[in-house]
Length: 334
Image 1 (spheres, rainbow, N blue to C red):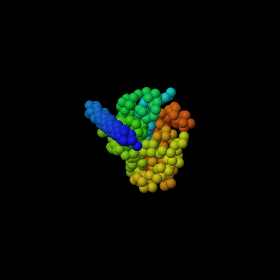
Image 2: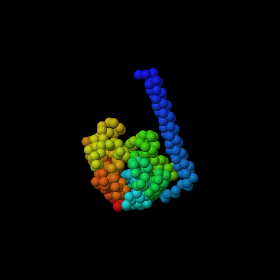
Image 3: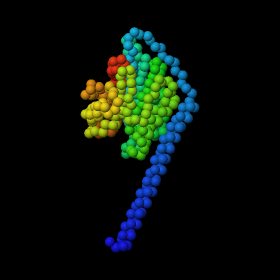
Image 4: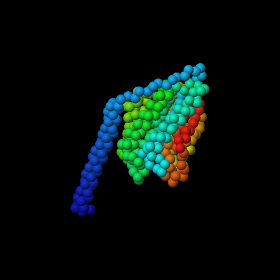
């Protein structure tokens, strides 16, 4: 190789190194900028909550009974608020969640004719927002941008908790985030920097004082206890095997692996993500409850999965002494 060619090659390598360095510096600045935005949203949510007067809730009448009490468990997940289809938008989402809570309270009143039900546990399973930029072309399938999705979801969550506090002696909330709440492209930020989590925090700042406990963390799963009953709450996107239908075998394989000692012991697992309600039995006799979505007419599901789910959410009644589900309902919302 001629000396001039060698010098030219070295110069090219040096230029590439300089370009890579500039690119890395720019990437770090962008990530820092996005991180500052997330922190600013959390601070704004806190400030807004401090400026909002507390809601006064009349405590419900507690009926005495010699029979053992059970606990109502409501699984809310995959609201996809902001999604726009021929039969679904943010107003439809709000109305269907209101319908779910009304039906859940009505079913609870039927249960109360036989035994006390004084406590409610609300599971928030993630994908509460539709998000922006999750997949190409998504901007054409939403009726509101991320800012509006965030505060609308937090308001609906607050309304749900207020309604439950008016009908149950104690209310507990357990939160998990989903993939649609992701900020930026996959991998730009930690998965736990998520719009779902910010919406949960806004609601907690506003009405958390009405709850006995508000469980949330940056983990991909939550373990919650109801007496002797121990549940696992995940979103469901942890199951990656997908070939055009709800991957029942993949779900069973993954949750059985978790139950083998990978995470803390649990009786049953609750997840959403797949928009189709079903239940599966694990090898240890525990169960997996997959909860539907209030969304309807999802074109992706119609085209790729060749299926549509009827809008629904899930309601259970838990026997805290025997540590098991005493009654289960898929609550239809169409």
